[in-house]
Image (tube, rainbow, N blue to C red; front, top):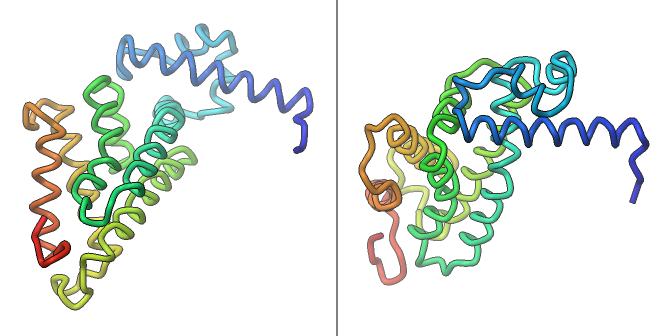
Length: 211
């Protein structure tokens, strides 16, 4: 394994300090109330150094939340893939559950994050976020594949697009919960949405049972 040189180690350490400081400040005060100057001071780096890692405050939010979400989503994916095929509803909930849980805990961070991922402008850390979500969509497609005949899907909808439709609906429901427009129990609401979505796609489990 290649050993990092001193310069690379210093860069990695500064990035780690920035991520740690921003995570802590966003959790305490929310994204809107936190300034990049506060993050730089807490991370013990110059303002210009911070902007070399994230050129805007929005990109900082995306960088930090991506780093926090990635291991949580990976754990959810492993849990989903360990389930039996008949547990497709629970498996999809495993995938989106970590995002919903973080949104419940830190709505003032995850709400802006989701809006930027869905509707924001192009940037390197937004691209990373879209890749994280694309990976979830691919996993949803893999979970649906044993239960969906392509010919049974609604006209104009293939399996990858159906999986994207499922994820888009669920992530929008998480965003609704963040802004106080969702159901009191987000997990129960997501589970109900998954069942309705899968029935709309014609999903059939073993023995023809519906989700």
